[in-house]
Each structure stands twice: as structure tokens, then as C-alpha cells.
Image 1 (cartoon, one colour):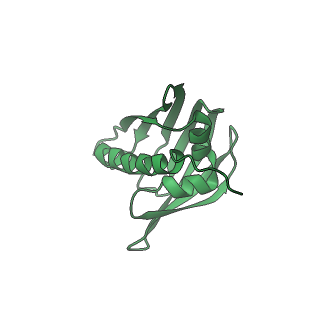
Image 2: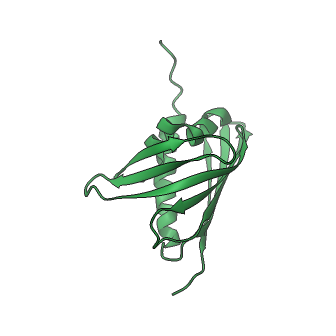
Length: 152
């Protein structure tokens, strides 16, 4: 059994300002909306957006009702530019701590997003992480790209 960990790197450009993308990574309702992969609902149990703070979240399989949870701790927050956090699964079969770095850069058409997730437990295939992220980022785009006027 290998103890090696995996790394995934993702790159996207979204037609949305960096402030809106940053908000989507740090807002409870937004994270619950876009972060769970297809077929899952998300619940954030508590959130504290500051370095040293973080959140606890559960993903629940809508079909079976089974769920898994994880804890996030913020280690770097630079408004509209960078988020770094650690992720730790509550399941002892998924040991260790992952580090996720999200870099946002304003570009002519919106925001350039680069995500690196390191330390993925060896029991989780890296390609499954890519698949999950692809689904999450598709949902993120649907949340942040529409420019809906405020009629309130």
C-alpha cells in the first residue's frame, strides 16, 4: 500500500470579476451551492473566514443519503487574489492533510483561476479528484458568470 499522495492542478478563466469569484470561495451559501460534485448536496456546519479559522462541511449523496465530512482551515487569505487552506477528512481511512491553493488574477475577460490541491490520500485516485473539481468548477461558473441586475 503506497503512502504517496497525489496532486491535482486546475486552470480556468471565468467571465466574472475576481471579487465575485473570491466571494464564492468564502461565502457559506455559495460553497454549499457549487462545491459538492454532481449528485451531492453540501452543508456547512460552521464557518469563520479568517486566517486560523475555517469551516466544516458535509457532502451527502442525494440518492443513497450517505455522507462524508471534512474540515477546512484557512492559512492564507488575500482578498480577491489568493486563498490557501488545509483540508482534513473526518474519516480515519482518509488520513493526512491536503493543502489547497487558489490563485485569482484579473484578466481582460474576467478572472484567471489556478487551483493546486496537494497531499491527496493515496486511496483516492487523482483522476477522481479531477472529475470532482471539473464538476464543481462547472457549477462555480454557473453561479459567478451570470450578471443579474438587482431589481430589489
